[in-house]
Image 1 (cartoon, rainbow, N blue to C red):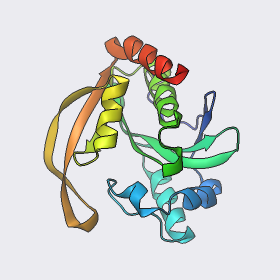
Image 2: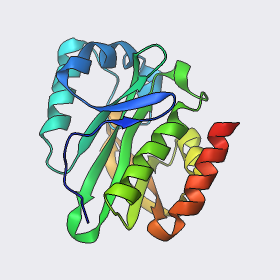
Image 3: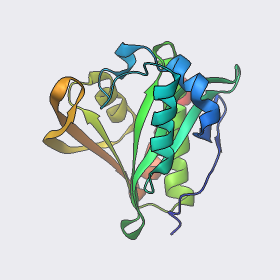
Length: 194
């Protein structure tokens, strides 16, 4: 079991996930300013570069998270971010979350490859037995995407967190277990081949 947090780079065909650092601040700010891309996340879009740097700093200081910048390899462009979070070594589990992409990268296969890289690392290198996801119940696109990759819907935590606009968000939980990883991996690879 290896759930230690250490800087890793995950390299795919179209994307590279790099440990999120202040060097990514300008790229993260440039792709993270559109309010509609953040409507279902706990916070609003970035208001300026200082706000972006604070967000990156907070992510990097957390002891149970590993944040990544999502880089589109052909253009070397930062297109979003994702994280391992709620890393629980004693239970061999973690969450994949805080995933967002600039809207022009939606429906391009980028998010599918990000999930393949993160899930692959979690199950094959970190030896997780459970990887979970949660999404705002109002976020139909994310709910559909999680079902599409084969994650199992587990239930809803009602009024789970207070988010933008003082909204009491219901969070829908999904998971993939180690015994399901082979089927989910095959499904992700098929989706990427389309």
